[in-house]
Image 1: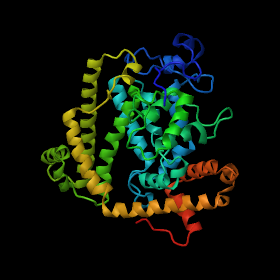
Image 2: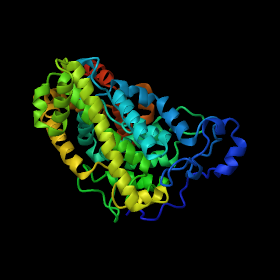
Image 3: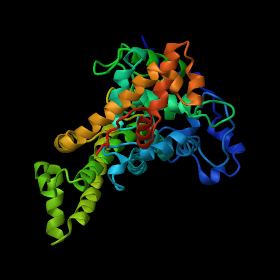
Image 4: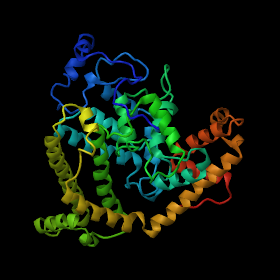
Length: 431
């Protein structure tokens, strides 16, 4: 069973107190005058739990700004540009990819962080990295790997995000991974809420009974307190994710011709804005209307989150970020009435976009393509590229499977398509 101990005694390296840090940071104070202006419940860099491997501090960046920059420069982050959000990259130049989605999430998260007076750099770091463990073809690729590797721990993109950031990125001389702060890693694994219940049990909706073993290993190393809520910055990143995809999926769905603007009459939350724009701008063309709709809807969502979160904070009266973690429910949230309207929007997008037959047909082909590669390499590990073949360790089937899973999960859409063509006689066009 996973530990239920309070958030103390982590194996991370200590960081210097804020007062001591100012003596040694040179120009640091000029760029980052300190956390004194942040809310009490924010995550304060001066009280950070630090990094697993001790490092000298950067003279010009805060701990969390440095994490953000490491994520931006990571190879896995660049690959997100050619990983599916909803539409395969070659379907059009203007559809969102995992990269552009992550950038939009980061922008919304920074806005909310500024409004709620918490650490913007930490919000941005978590937002930029939250999808870095996703497979090619998005959730279709994830389903394929989950099925193909059932006997080897399955697959979960949140766990894969941790693997990428703590092991698979190999950029630094002194350690594997990016050696990110505890607060950044904790926010990534728990940005959608507690991972286990108070007894340490994995939620019933989890796809694989093997995943708790992976979680337990990370818990022993990092001590995330998986039964607790995430800190405030991670909760902001999570709700920014919701705001971003609900808005850009309207835009992308319209651009793809999966529905028309007038079909949005089925979604009162959105249709009221459409009517207001048309009333104020007679004869406005549809493209400008859609942009204005997205702008107003994002603003409306952000303002609702700010008002509801402020109310919850006033009720809770948190004195530190751990009070947010131990609150028993999310503190950063939509209001009840707004959540009902948002649910209707999500139902509309599910029916008209995610379950659209054209999208489903492409995703079925993409899923089969991913499954083909997984099965091929499990049966023929010697066909792996040189670097991966050396690491696979054919004598250890579990290690071999883990490397194959890492290899496929890191692929971009276009790489996996080209690789499939080189190994199989027929490859779907995904159109």
